[in-house]
Length: 379
Image 1 (cartoon, rainbow, N blue to C red):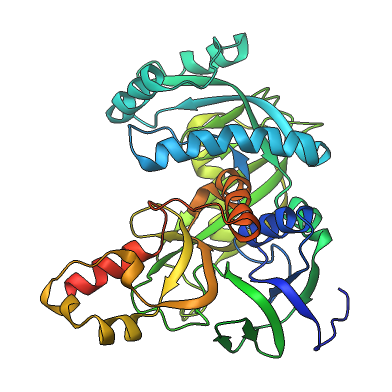
Image 2 (image 1 turned 180 degrees about the vertical axis):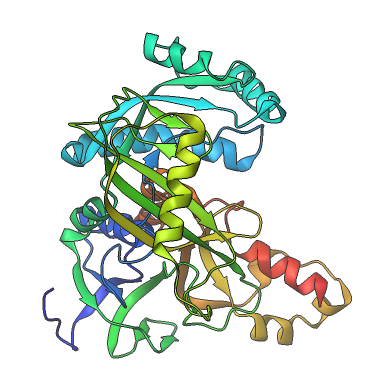
């Protein structure tokens, strides 16, 4: 990590060095920006480092998240192949329902997706013969990335510092993040304690666990069913990731039980296929963040106190356009990508970078302001 002068003024300071912060740092430095990347524990030290890091589409019926994930999925495949092929394992994806009640969703997806599909290979057909009541879809191309290393390499153009941010002061001309100064700041801190008072933003902590394994079983495709199992490469695979919305490391009374989590991963994998001569090589755990409506948060942040003060009609249910709200100046949020961080991260990071460097408008659907509007109505 390089030493950073306290007198330096950065174009953008990014708080949080997971997949969102690292991807944003990549696109901003590609655009010639001077970027400071801050994280309390280091690059991909939390949920991003523990992610399954599968690059796959969301198998769902119509909705904003499905449309976003399909576009982001195609972008991510091209992105990783162009910049990080040495950290990416490409293979077809076989997605199988967990039970017949989920079949309708897969059949609907197959009829309404533009993604390239392919007929099951002989190995996939043999697998499906063991699950005759389950619907399936085989996507021609998907990927698995080296989660931690790809984040490290994306962040190489930025100045990186292990630093826990205590204060963030937003001013009309710049932001002061502790003793660092930047023209803009972007919060990518996941489900951990925020550095701004944002009573309307409630992120769901999603604890994840992934394991890398050695196995004699040959799997020529990525498999998604009860969980995700990576295609084998030189006798190695990955299983991940279990999701626990009840465990949060900042509030839990007991530490996470690694052994129990490992056994749960192996048990769920065994519901899909028989992995032979398995040796667990490494465990990864960490906290991801998801939003209450499952869509990411990408955009400016309303100053709730100031807005409620000068727009007194809000409490009476009066509608105001978003432009009338007061916002914290020069600070934005990029958060809530949940279990699709390595799919959504690069695409949304590019959109945020274009916004910061070229003034390109961000998606109104992903604007964090939507949560302020809902919060006001409940008060």
